[in-house]
Image (cartoon, rainbow, N blue to C red; front, side, top):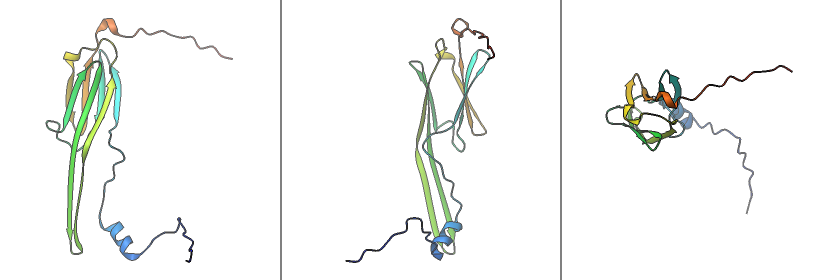
Length: 142
C-alpha cells in the first residue's frame, strides 16, 4: 500500500471547473433568515424586514400572540438557463421566521403591516401608560 500526501490547500483549476464557475450568475443567500430593524416612531414600535422578491399577499404571515410578533416568509425561487453548452435549472425554497418579543402595553388589535419595494413594515401601537420612563444619568469625568 502506498501513501500519498494530500495538499488540502491546492487549487483545482481544471478548465471544465473554471468554465462552469464563470458560465452562470448565481445569487447566494446565507442562512434561512432575513434582516430586520426595530425603531420607535412616536407611539408606535416599527419593525422593518428586508424581504425582496416575495408576494406579500401569499408569501408572508404576520401574527401577534402572547406578546410576541412573528414574521414568517415563504420563498420559492426558480431559475433556468439555456445555452449552447446545455441547460441549468436551480431552485431555492423554504421558510424564514423571526419572532420578536414585544414590550408591555402593546395594542395587539392595532397592529398593521405594509409591503413596499421589498420592505415589510409592521407598526405596533404602544399605549401611553406603558411607555418606559426615561431616566437621565449624570456622567462624571475621571
